[in-house]
Length: 343
Image (tube, rainbow, N blue to C red; front, side, top):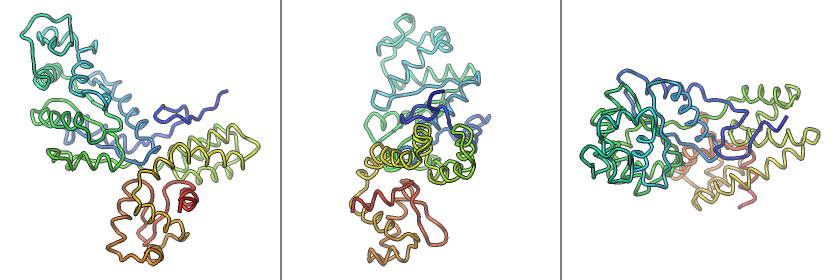
């Protein structure tokens, strides 16, 4: 049997733990007769499973006959790509042909020569979505790793018009917190400020324990230790599982290999995206094992008003977890060790 764990970002793993409650909430909202929400923004730190999460939702909606799923590349002309993918869908092509929607001005649907050529891509999509609505279908658009680009802002502005016209198009976007936040705060993106956001929760450690016992063939106490070591971080779940599989008789090597891999392919990038002040705060947190905010502030010589914005930003970014008891802790395994080496 080959290794059931994967080290490839975004690839649906063989061994996966679904975030069932969060996924069910989004699917339930989108499938209502009169949906209260048409959009959801998925945020979380690198490696937390955003791509796998929206893929799970997309795959589940694909099984429903009324749903059409369109995955868009944020690095391309999103509106034209959207029209092209709708037109190329075998379930929709006949609908557009019967409606004589001529998209030749965009190099789309060369077989449709009747009908007045449409020269505005937003109008073309409006007509396409209107026909889709008349046939009782809904469209889910997924955009992975969205950021504040010109194409993304144009698409979001057009999408707002589609929603105002009650067209059946739903949107799932993933992105790092800072990228989604910049897009939400861009000029003309007011509607995104009100859009629901889902911050991915850590994986359930009981579920991780079960998976490790089942796939690695290890005792429960060892599976519990490995599961707790992941801190529910999705990439760590895969990484620790992968190297434990590869080194079943050498747990120390497995742990060191997992640490090295997390550092090289996740933590170095996460660290580079933190501001100098954020890094200073992270290092102070690492120096206070108890995580007590009062001690961290004393170390930094920060007042509450000075410290709180950094704490809140690091929580939203997925680097730390805040506790009601006036404490914080790292959300990522061994990130305290990693940050102290970078002081």
